Image (cartoon, rainbow, N blue to C red; front, side, top):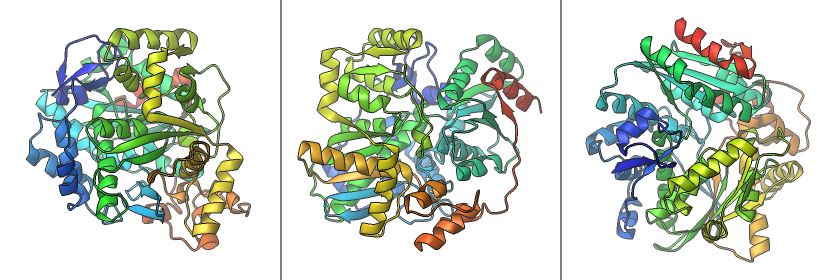
Length: 496
């Protein structure tokens, strides 16, 4: 299987080249030239298998220059103990007969990014060897909270790699910040950016597009790469957990084989819900994909109107991992609905760069509407939803999952539909203690890691072990830079 750029330029490349390069030479994102097909009989067969085998099968469909043995070995390493604290890796929680939560936060950093970032280091290191790239790779990451810690943990002390994470100084939760700035490992660095996530992401993209800098780093023996979901090696493992969720539904009697199931996904950079779209493209029986947005509802608005417009206020919310206005992975969807015409995508991205907005054709909007619905959740609704779910079901959810569940409730009320739906739960509620405690009607009296103990006492729920261990952790990384200081921060890190 070959991969091409969403913007139509450059030669087609193998999967290992796509992963090693991260970003196409013309600035586009790599996408498969064609998609494999997973027959229903195979899905039924996978429903009898553990998560590792489901993931290995799915990933193998897309990475055909990796052997079955290689991928099997990587999935064993990525999803083995003690990294994940649940035997199902990505278990389903049944709220009621029609509603299930896909818990993607049982990994080492307690967020869904672990599902991909425990796998990516193995894929990237192997890809570099396959492409005969022997420079040391420097992974640059812009994070709105969860990707950063997951990348730091996934690449910690991996030979031949260095990892530099940038996060918006005032745009992550206290627990997310503690997780990152106390990270162990001899090859990692963390820097706060004086701006929001879009500023941070733009700064990283500017570093990647600086040819002079890339040349300078190459002469020093470094290759830049990314662990964000622009890298195909980050995205493809995410497809696997949608396959697995459907397998668990049919094995548990929540759906009959072949029955369409909806998914409701909280998303900011569009990578998580895009993986669901790709699962549908290869044959998973998915009906509708509900894109849940917080107050920064640029994605929900785009799905509803066909207009993507970043010329709007940026809000810092209680669901910070979704505080994004420039959603990088949307470009991959644009490519598919534009009938793989890279010129169309390139023109839209030029419009976005120049004016901060674009509008797709009526035909493209109709194509989006066949699969996607968009819904928005306010701050107040997010907090109320956490309390209502806990009071009604005794089930504790985080702020991002609350956005998704409220979006699903609104979608059902507006459409009259009551399909079996999986709500994608992206983080442990203990990563957002202050907001969750506040939603339950008790103002927080502590800060930092002590909030974790307070939430445990309030709810009787047990925090994941990796979060309980944060108490008393001292920060290793305290540097804060303006956006225009990010390049120098990278150079200082690599010169150490």
